[in-house]
Image 1 (tube, rainbow, N blue to C red):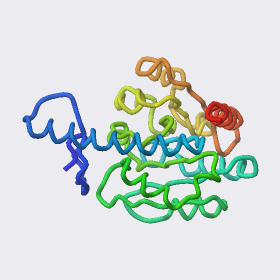
Image 2: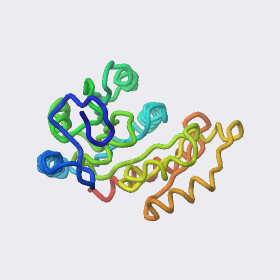
Image 3: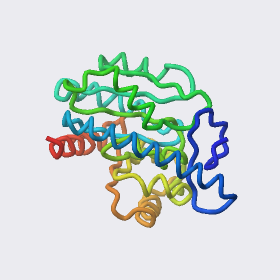
Image 4: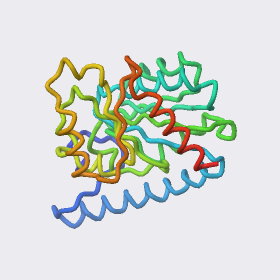
Length: 240
């Protein structure tokens, strides 16, 4: 069982957390995270060798990650060469949606697992021609707890927060928002219909991670999308 969130983790992975239960639990968690970190370093070196920008998209289920990816790929695929790793417990539904954009995609099903790890990603990218890519997008399993603990070898984590989830998610799940370099506040078109206080959400994010860049957008209306595209272009330029 996952010791972070209590899910029925099927792999040998466990999560590290900062208080004692017994010596064995702490030791196992540290050893497994150390192994993951070693594999993540291998992934990172491999991605860097190809000048590949790698982003790990994390969020709770239903935040709109897949729609964000679909819109981004359809808009930028003539400009940038993308591939997508899809992580879900079951089904290839999201991978099918990405494949319809014409971008290479590979599905990783984790079964009862609550996150992708560096070992899964290392094998997943074997399905792509990395030498002919600019950007690798990893859509992690929907979960605001476990993916924060696992380095995949990415350049940075991008946390997606839908305004339908409430403005207090950064305070309730600070580890995830602290680990993200970019936070996307999504579904801005629904703002007139919800009791969501945007300024309060911004304040909570600043409390948890004052260094994080925040982009507010809507895939449906297009508001803020160009800011996101420009951020992608800027990050890729830093890799070249």
